Length: 379
Image (cartoon, rainbow, N blue to C red):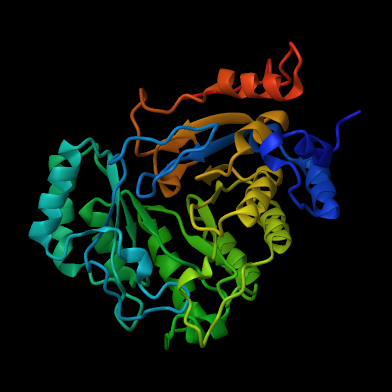
C-alpha cells in the first residue's frame, strides 16, 4: 500500500508542522498516479545567482554565473502596484549600448555564463530596446556560448522579429488574463488581447519563449490566472514559469494580501492538468517563510518540472515521492524541457546526499538512513 503523501511530509524534519490541505494533497496524489512516468519523474531545482541562496540541502552557485542587467537602471514609468520598480534596483545598470557591452565583458571575465536582460517599461508596457539590438547581436557574435534571456514586455510582430534577429536565446513576458488587473495593478490602457497578441508574435519566431503567470497579481487575489492558462495553451510556448506575487512594495493605499497557499496549490494542479506536456517551472518570486514551504511542497506534488530557490526540505520531499532530482545553477526561464541553454555538459551542483542522510540518522537515532537508496541525479 502506498504511503499517504501527508505522512511522508510529516516525516521530513524541515517540513514538520507545515499546514497542507489534506484534500488537495489527496487529489494531487491521485492525479500523480494518472500522469505519465516521464512527466512525473524528473524535477530540476534551479539556483539563479541574482539572489544569494543556499539551504541545508543545496549549496549556492557561483556569485556571477547568471547576473541580471537593466537597461534603465532602477527606473520604470509604470511603477505597477506590486513592484514599484523595486525589483530593478539591485540589478546591474547598463543604460547605454556601450555600457551593456562593457558590463557583459566584465561579467564574462568574472565567469558569467548568461544573463537576464530587462528594463523598466514605458507607459505602454514596452521596454525600449531599440538602440540595444545591434549590441546584443555583437555580444552573441563575440560570445556565442553566452546566453541571454530577455524580458520583452509587450511587443508587436516587428519587435519580436528584431529580438529574434539580435540573437536573444529566450524571451519572457507576463501573461495577464484579467482586464481589471491590467488597468488597476499595471495602470495600463492596454487590453488582455494585447498580451495574447504579444505571446502569439513571440511564439511565431524561432525564439525560445517562456511566459510567466503571476499568481495573485490582483492584490493577492486570483482573478485572471485561469484565463492566462488558456492563452498559454492556445500558443504553446517552450515552457511556462509560474510565480506568486510578493506584496512587499505595495502602496498603503492599495495593499496586497499574501495569496492563499492552498489556492496556489490548486492552481498548480490545474496548470499541470491543462498543460500536461509543457515544462512548468516555479520561479524564484514567491512569498517567504511558511507560505513558501507550502507553495513549494504543492509544486513538488503537482508534478511541476522545476523550482527556483527551493525551500528547505524540497529535495528530500521530491526524492521520497520517487522523483529524479537534478540541480542547475541557472535562471529557471532558461530551462526548456531537458535543454538547459545556460550550461555546458560539465556544469552543475552536486547534492550532498550524505549530509542529508547523516542528518536523518542523527534525528532518528537509528543506524539506517531512511534516504538510503534514493535516486538523486546531478548534472
